[in-house]
Image 1 (cartoon, rainbow, N blue to C red):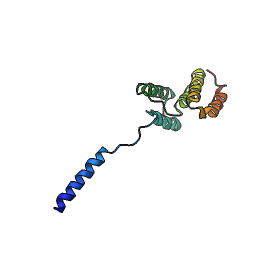
Image 2: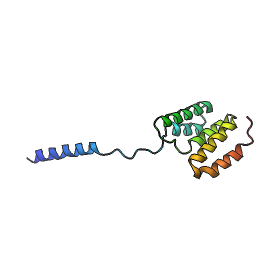
Image 3: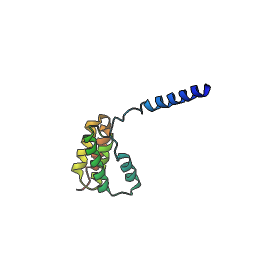
Image 4: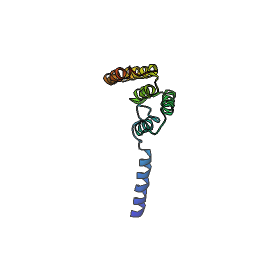
Length: 119
């Protein structure tokens, strides 16, 4: 009898554990952003490939109706600046400031720093 009760309790616990929520849904779409940051600092990836990957993440975020992760537009701006496209870099910095106002001081610093970059 005790074996039957123990078995029933274990089965009930297993069923209830399977119904438990998996945790909160992330607010932002991260995509490949974290891997691109890692590659950027390791300097083992072509900036143009990173630009393409981050732009793809932006498109994927739009398709699932989620905002991109904080810093993604700033990173994209740094990559554009690295390739000499300061207009696109400044556009990405401005987008980061608009989406995440707390980033304004840093974005202003980057824009000031990158102003002398030749196109």
